[in-house]
Image (cartoon, rainbow, N blue to C red):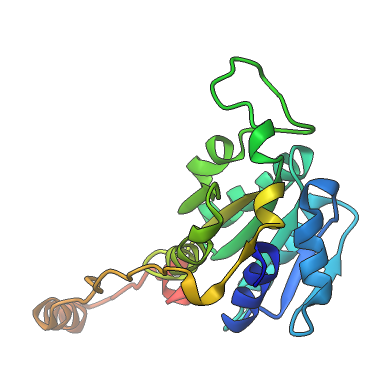
Length: 220
């Protein structure tokens, strides 16, 4: 048995993530501790969450790399949203892990604007600029959320994903053998050979062909 925080970064290291860009904060204390204890991950501290996010986004543009950024709750979340929006617009895969207040301190439907220290409704804020975002409310579902986030970030049109982890979930103990995973859907992105042949024929007949290759071609 070990902590959800340890499981998260063991999972990410096994997925090929070797660097995590971060700015430590109390709302992510177990997550930061887990990164520091993981011998397979190099942590890169920054002076500002926006810098950490920009570094992770730039890292993801390197061939075969996937950037990961770790931030605390509240201003840590809002500070990293600008580079996440950039990754969303440019279709760059990127994983954000954020701390959150304890589940008992979440504002939920209380009607107040903040209940826990430095609390913001992370999922609502980042949902429009991510392919997948979730606040983990059940420790037993952490494997599912991580596997789905990794799938969404790197499959089809790439983009950023966000895993928000309340403080008590970070420190909760889990048995990896009992965790259920994410069932990947079937690949439906194949192109018909007839379409390819028609495009080749059209280019062959053109007197002055022009190919406008966007960023998606490079990503593919």
